[in-house]
Image (cartoon, rainbow, N blue to C red):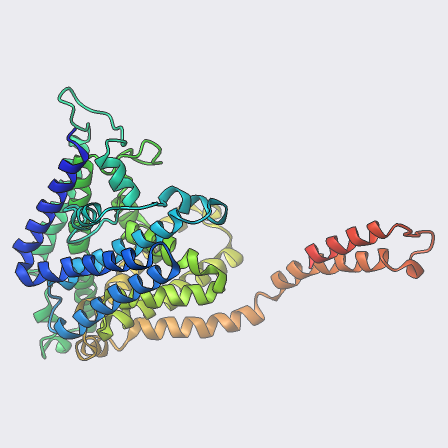
Length: 462
C-alpha cells in the first residue's frame, strides 16, 4: 500500500541488513560490488549482446574466484559466495530481460515477451538484488514480478485489514519449513558426517553401512527443503507469489518444492522434477532455450556445465551431477523395457502394483541417498572412502544395466524397430511408383504442380 520508492527502500535496507548480520562487512561489500559492476556494464554498453556476455562472464568469474579462494573441503561454509550465487542468477537473468525489452517483439518468444524489461534504475536493481525473500537463498524471482509488486499491479485478495489473504497459507508453508529444519537438527544426532567418515565405520555390516549412508544422504536434503519452504512462506505473506492462474495454488507462483510429489513419487525423475523448481526454470529459460540453436545436445551440455560450475568447483559437485545422468537414463530405459515386456502399470494386478510401489520407493531412497554423497562430502577422498565401503554398488549396478540394455535392445526388441520402420518404407515405395510413369500404366502426371506436391509429401514422410 506504500509508494514504490518506499517499498524499494524497505527491500533494499532490510535485505542489506540481513546480509550484513549474517556475513559481516566483507560479505556485504562483495554483494554490493557485484551489483555495481553489472550496473556499469549496462550503462556503458546498453541493451546489447556485449552487455549479456560481459555480465555473465564477470559475475561467474567473480563467483568462481570466490569459490577457489574461500571454499574448504571439510564442510559447506555459508560465506559471501552463498548469496553471490543467488545474485549471479538474478543479474544475468535481468540483463537478458533488459536486452529482450529493447529487441523487436517479432524476434522474441511469448515467454521472453512476458519477462522483457525496457530499462531499470540503480535503485530498482539494488532493491531487487537484495530482496530478503531471495537474498540469501531461493526462490528465484523475475524482475517483472518484483516491479509489478512494488507498483501495486499484483492484485491479490485481501482480508478486512487490507492484508493478503495468504496468512494461513504462508504460516503453513513456514511450518513445513521449520519441521524439515527441526528434522535435520534432530536427525543429525543419529546420522552425521563424523560417524560416516570414522575409520571403524567400514567394519560394520554392509547392509547397515548402506542403510546409514542412504539415511545420511536423505537427511541432508531436508536442510535445503526447509530453507526454501520458509522463504516461500515469506513470499506468500508479502503477496509476491500471487498468481490466480496457477494450476495448484494461487499463492504458488514462487514455489521451489512440491513436497507431496517429492516424497510420494515413484522415480528419481519425479524427485528431480519437483525439487528446486524456480532455479530449474531459470536454467531452462535463460540457458537451455536460448542456446537451442546450437543443437539440442550442445545446449544440454552447456547448461549442465554451467549448473555444476555455479554450484562450486570441488570434485563432489561434478561427481554428483555426472552420476545423475546415467541413473536417470537407466531408469527411463528400465521403465520402457518393462512396459514392452509386461505391459503398462495399469495393466498389472493389484498385488503386483503394490509390490512394485514398495520396491520403487525403496530403490529411489537408496539411489538418492547414495548419489548425493559427493554433493555433501565435497572432497574426492571422503567420497571415495564412503563409496569404497559400499563397493561402489550403485555405480556397478548402473553400469551393468547399460551394458545389459544394449544386449536386450539387439536381441529382444528388434520387432518394435521393424514395425516403426515398415510403414514409412511402404509409403516411400508407393510414392516412388506414383512418380514413375513407366511403372504405373494408365496414370499420367501431366501437371508439374502434382509432382511438386508429391515431392513435398515424400520429404515429410522421410
